[in-house]
Length: 250
Length: 129
Image (cartoon, rainbow over all chains, first blue to last red; front, side, top):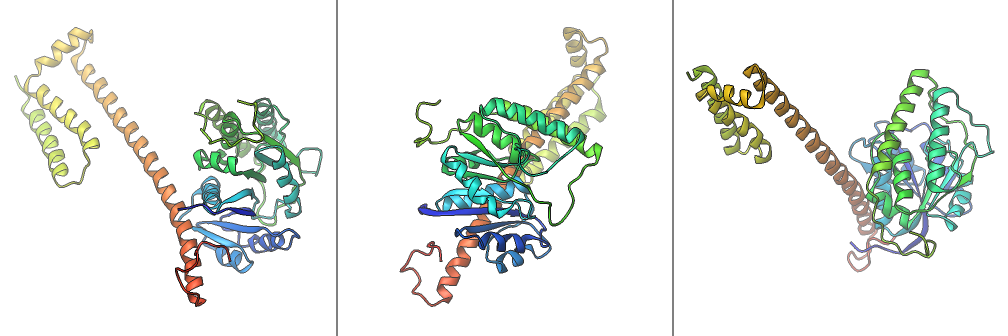
């Protein structure tokens, strides 16, 4: 199939049973001044998420069964590549990411291939405690060294990518837990993609509560190091490089 | 003296695997391991002294221990092989799921265009509305 050229930006929103908030989030994105195409990747929801998303004006990509965030995102990237989108941005369906920050995060792509909307970057009042905090701190410092640019929030799902990022993600975007954030980011950096971050505020989720249970947090710590250790030893992706930005590197 | 019970057991296993292969219930790449085990057991059942010789040669005091360690290693290998295969299958399923979802969107778009009464096929159906 031939790829089309497409100058619009695709907002990819993975959604698994997010009926509470997906409609509102989609509507909020579509109300922005700049016209965005919204793709809701319905990850095997059983609660009317796809109907609500479609009613709100999104294109809905229905996965036949639940693949996890990583799986949903890769499906979204594949769709973006097929339709020739040159810029994509991932936004959570739960309303955590403020659509008004989309432009700011996209602007990061002028300097890099991947732009992360980051909490903790001196903006907003998002806080975490205990092992989860240590995990995030340590991951951030390792990723900062690797990317040679300050990254404070490597598990943020609010990230934008250009065609190089899409191509790299399609080569390596694990469906595993944390694979969609840490693993994919580490391999992207090691494959020569440039990453930057843009400080954003996160809003409280409109549905569900984040877990602060100490055992869960400790499990999270363990799994993030597991993910990191593997990511650091993986094969680099061989991304075709039409490199206006990357000249002189590699 | 040959061990009759072990011999027939091994024969049954080899027969079963061969029959499953013949009926295409089992693919060769999985069957090969079971055939190796079956045939090895057949040979050992027919010539039990063989185990003693080998145990002596590799320095295992109790021949049965050699048998146990070999069986454990064998089962471990089979398990690992199956885990690997299922991971491959899951990845393939995932790719198919993505593909199906994208094709479905595209078919729905084509349907919309056709229902709208525009001459089908004269325009690129992929064009965004």
